[in-house]
Length: 479
Picture (cartoon, rainbow, N blue to C red):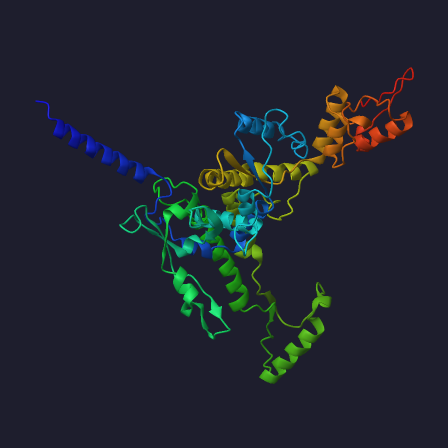
């Protein structure tokens, strides 16, 4: 018999289960940490520091743009244009913004641009991005507090160190949960009052309180099991990091605690010197053979043997192990040796290829993650269809760029002003032939002036293999 009350109860239970399941599977929900983030933060030393700092520096000098994508297809056209510009000409891509339906970036005076470039009274946008990437790479999670005004609109932004934030599950006071700021990880001292910062009223207002999840913007590297925490590269390579730290500790202990005389001289069996005589002989020996100026000097002695006591780096295997763990930790964060400041040998092209790989495969994906989160959580407060994009500094091989320019000139597909934009020069304008192809002459400019101008525009002497003029036609041919 059909029972409407039973069917309604079953549907209610099913809907409640679906809501609970979506909450469990949703990323960024406060639950509990899967790893010890304070310990991960303490690992910001050695090669971990070198690797993460290299990424943070690139994030710091990245450009931040906001687009109004109200026009259909504007975002897709912009992405297509970026993909086409990856091989070069990145300096020129903004010259004709909007020509193919693409949207132009918003002015720096727009409210969202202001808060992205100056998130709070004590930080610049560059410093803010540095902190976000630092927390993301160290702990796998970056927590941004979007401080709202009385109308719920974000007016300031702060990066909360993951190590001092404790997840608070949903409760009656915070239905969606939040994060509690812990006191044990903060260390400040107020000299003017002669007491610690923990005794001031400002500290009591911040520490121990819970920030609701609705005011927080959480970016994380997805954990394979736990949806409420991110997977830290430092945690994933914890054994590599710990092994590198142990090697450093052993090297330091060897130098600091170990006895390190260079040689030992034993006397003959028939000799029985006193202590004073041994000390006098040692002082005379050190005076005669000690010092850098005596390096490599031959020593002749009447003793029966001379024994070396210093353990060589090869015997201790410090050199190879140091290099192995260095490479492992750099690879853990996707940082090549050149980007980390290590001068690896290689050709000029390999140098730029390594840096370009670093930008494309490591830095830009991180910036894309942060930009997408800003687009979803921050941008809707300032208008519809706003897209935040964070672009890393482009690394282009100059030799490759010159070859591409030479090909475009031969194919007659690049204009004078386009060439000048790539060179960083101001445009000539249509009245001076700026809209004409580089391989064509401008009748408004005398031939000698035009020839010099085109030579200057083309730039590199390696591109100017020849110049021909036939039948008084004003043309420049690059072969």
